[in-house]
Amino acid sequence: MARKKIPLEAFDFYWKLGPRRSYQAVADHYGASKRAVTLIATKERWKERLEKTEREASEKLKDMAVETIEAVNRRHLKVARLIQIKALEALKHLRFDSALSAVEALDKGLLLERQIKSDPSERTSMSDVELTRREYERWMTPAAADDEKPVVSGE
Image (cartoon, rainbow, N blue to C red; front, side):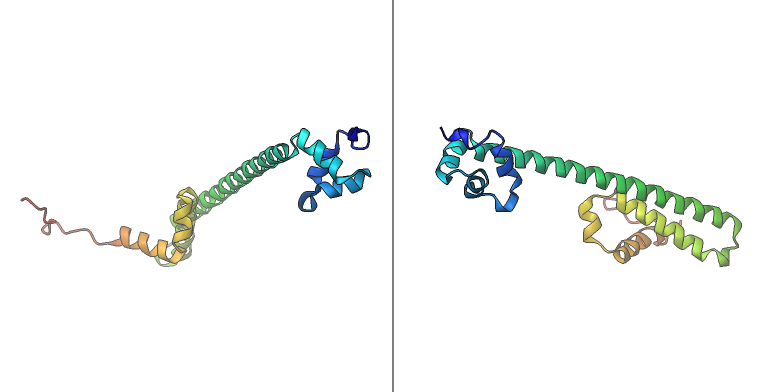
């Protein structure tokens, strides 16, 4: 009986109301009573349909966000590799004492590539300065001299 005033597309109207969504708003829009809208909403399971629709929309947004992040990472990797290539080309043609800017560019390109390829939690937990310092210490520690072999327990 109430269906005469409330069309089949009432659920779509209800869903599109967004944060202002209410059965009363649907009733006002279609010139029906809130009770009539509530009866149809219960019969047609609007609550469940709404949850499903919102869940699907949320999943689509997440998928789009992941695709966007992946596209940004691919673009940044290309830039990082280009910086590295240009820096290496410059290093080939420069004297040692004037190659500092090329070395800095190479360092930044490598750092950017590592950040992009690292675990997201690592990217946010360590500043660029800390990461550079850690890598510097890792790569620039002097190697043990031939006569200074490291002590291995059990020898």
